[in-house]
Length: 362
Ligand code: UD1
Ligand code: UDP
Image (cartoon, rainbow, N blue to C red; front, top):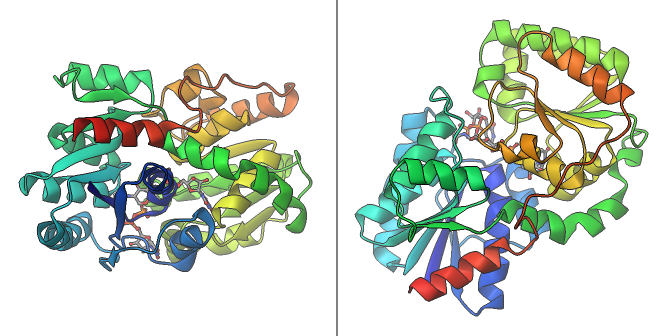
C-alpha cells in the first residue's frame, strides 16, 4: 500500500509526523508531499529537523499569494504528483489551503482520500479554514475525527457511519512523544523568563491581525496585560508583516515586559507552554495542546471549532474585542491553578488507529 500525505503549513507538520511514524511501524510505504505553503526556516524546516519527519518526497514550492493563487498552485501541482504515482490513499490533515487542494486533486483522480481532523466546525464562514474544512469533508472517503462534536457535525451534514471514525488527536501523538524532551529544555530560563510567571502569546488569525483598527485595539490590550504579567510573543510571519505595516511593531518592541521573537521550534514552544502561567492565543492547535498540558488558555476569538477544549479542557473563549481578556486574565492570575480533563482518545495513539483503519479498508 502506498500513501501520500499532504503537508504545507506549520500545524500540518505536527499532524503529519505521527502518520509517518505509524506507517513505518506497520510497514506501510508513505511519501510526504510538501506543498511549500509555508517556507521560512522557522515555519517549516525546523519541524523536519525536530520531529523525525522524512525528507519530502516532493516539494512543490507554491509559496504565498491570495487564497485562490495558493489553492490553485497546490491543486495543479498535487494533481500532477498524484496522477504520476497513483497512491492507494491520499491523506490530508487539518484545515489549511493545502488541505482542501489536496482533497480536491485526489478525489477527482478517483484516488481514495481521507481527512485527518475531520468534522470540526466553528460555524463561522468568514474564517478561511471553515471553508476548507467543509469542502474537504464533503468530498473525502474517510473522515478521521478528533472529538465527539466533529462526529455530530458530520452526521448532521449527512455523512454515513461507515465514513466517520473517531480516532483521537494526532497532534497529541506528537506532544506525547516530545514532552519529556521538551521539559528538559527549560527554554523559558534561557529566555530570561521565570517559570509560571509569564504569559505565552501567539496571534495569526486574519480576523485579529489583518485590520489595522482591530490590531490597534489588540496592541492596547497587550500593553495592559504586560503590566500585569510579562509576555513572550513569538511572532507569526503574517502578523509580523501586518504589525510592521501599521507601525505597531515598534510600539510592541517598546513595551518593557513584552518580548518579541521569531517563531520558535516545536520543542521550545512545548517547553514554553509547559512553564507558562497562561497562554493567550488565536491558534487552533494550541487550544488542544494546552488542554492536555493543563495550562490555562485564553483564546482571543469568539468561537472555536474545538469545543471539547472548553467543555473538558482549560480553554476559555475571551473574544478579541471587549473586556473579556482583561477579566479572564485577572481570574487566572488570582485563582489557584486548575487542570482540565484530557479528552478520550487523546492518548498518543491516534495515528496508529488511522493507519490500521486504512489497512482494513484497502
Ligand atoms: C495559514 C493557514 C491557517 C493556519 C496557519 C498556521 C490557510 C488559509 N491559512 O495561515 O489556517 O492556522 O497557516 O500557521 O491556509 N508567510 C511568510 N513565510 C512563511 C509563510 C507565510 O512570510 O513561511 C507570510 C506571507 O506574507 C503570507 C502570509 O504569511 O502571505 C500568510 O501565509 P498563508 O499561508 O497564506 O496564511 P497563514 O496566515 O500563515
Ligand atoms: N508552534 C510552534 N512554534 C511557535 C508557535 C506555535 O512550534 O512559535 C506550534 C504549536 O505548538 C502547535 C502548532 O505550532 O503545534 C500550531 O500552529 P499554528 O498556531 O500556526 O496553526 P493553527 O493550529 O492555528 O492552525
